[in-house]
Length: 128
Image (cartoon, rainbow, N blue to C red; front, top):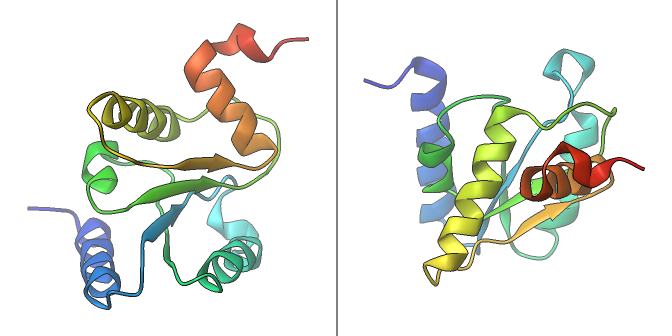
């Protein structure tokens, strides 16, 4: 049985997909939610104006479970830190899906782009 937060997110994901409003984009919070989520809500609003639905992902969890429920990943900017395990797993899963002929876009802004580079090329890929 899924933990309560996972079950709730699963329900939200099902509702969003059932609406048939377009793709469901997962937005990864690069900072703890205790610091507020208006930053992420701005990203969500921006994406939703183009017909997609969004869901704020947890900071950790089973990447495969979430990957199967969203259509793309958006990683906003934030303070510099190493790529989290959850994000690394999501990016690697997207690469695997692409190799299998599936289409799963991953977008990174600032820190998000650095994490994509690091997840693909390793930590030394972003050293100057």
